[in-house]
Length: 164
Length: 330
Image 1 (cartoon, rainbow over the protein chains, first blue to last red):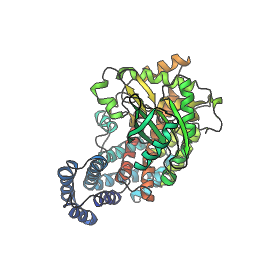
Image 2: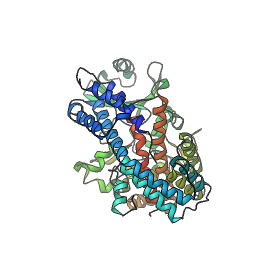
Image 3: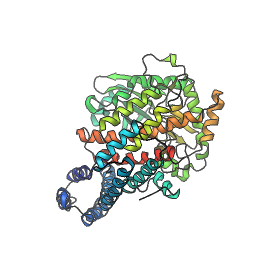
Image 4: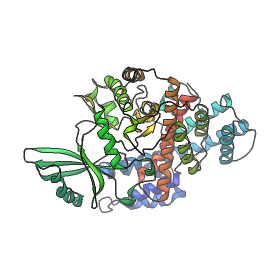
């Protein structure tokens, strides 16, 4: 299931950061803000253009806190790009696993709610192998979008954790 | 900032009589709730550095503020820690001023506090293997401070901590199965009550001053100190989030567990319980994951609309893989 904050919230936070910049110093900023505001039209190539702008215009010229924010903005854009590319196939497989594990049909949000309740109520045993495999796969998928350079994720790959 | 400099220059001679003027003040970075400022003074003899730490004015506190002790108590615990051989910057003066708020002045200790540099820089290559042992000694000395030294300090043990963070997680209203699994495991493994100690509450890489001359000359950020289970301090520094990508070195990304445990056991003369250490490391990992979720709530509330406040929410999943490793794949 998708992590939070949502893509929309991440885009809003990047937009606010760009809006706070001095447009005279970075005249292209306005175009990129327009692209971000047109959220339904966002795609990989548009994100790449903004990342390029951040690398070439912002990171090399900004200093202090704004430079740090530019790095954060680039990182958030990379998360968005990975989520756009990967999330649908991950969620499809997650739903298939959940329906089997819970013996129940439903959408991803409702199924996760049921899963949480069954774990909490111990209707599903913590030693259940199917449950454990599901949690490992779902978490590895999540990390591949959110933080693919994180040490814990890289160790998971190295140690052969199950992946979708 | 100019205003702060002006006010400080008016009061500083009250307790540093040879101060002629303030040469410069700059905000020190750090994720804590209280502000720290580095002040460079011109004195009659030479230049001198000190630190001013204060509670940000009024509404600047974030939603976690209920966890923090009063800054006057922070100064008090640092003074007492100093008496018990815990390395801390010495307190110079505690103030409660109507213009600049409550806070204290303390000694400036030279060294590195950025976790990333501490685990990566060649500069610290020779001392890194010695730091875990030092941490064990320091934590043991903190735990030797008699709790009778304090009145009205919050008591929070395993169950209290777990319930508090479970509540924050539920308030966020996002169903995260790995967190649910972890909470269930923690509830079944709550340690039996043991003698409560005064604990630092945020003892980790990032809150320690590291120096080639004397390893750890200062422990900072005492604002979360409380009475609780001493194992909390020993485990928090091992949470993977504080290893700065050096996963293979569990103590702060710079050292081995056994080095820390052995030196702690040596000072206090008792053997540590590994299961209890695991419990607190799992709880610590969960806590950081939930704190990341809470950042999303702070962003949504409009209190802080900065881009980094929003993006840190996506770091919550880091703790999920760490919990999987501790509970499912171990």
